[in-house]
Image 1: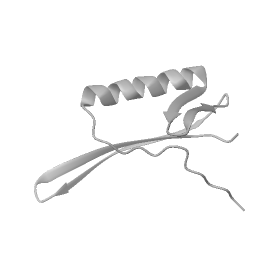
Image 2: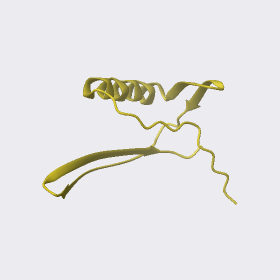
Image 3: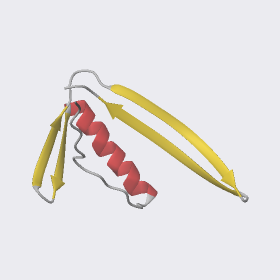
Length: 79
């Protein structure tokens, strides 16, 4: 039986520059092998192993003359 728990879930609109800053923070966390988050329940630290699985894709969908482009990055690991 699997036990799945969502630790953090954020969906928001940001300035492109601020989205880039978020990605820099994520990159720094990967380099340190540790993510630190502030949550409503207090600080949360997530440690990473030496290796992680990385998936990424870029998709473009056009509808009624308007294009929507999506970049998806997924990083997962077993602990």
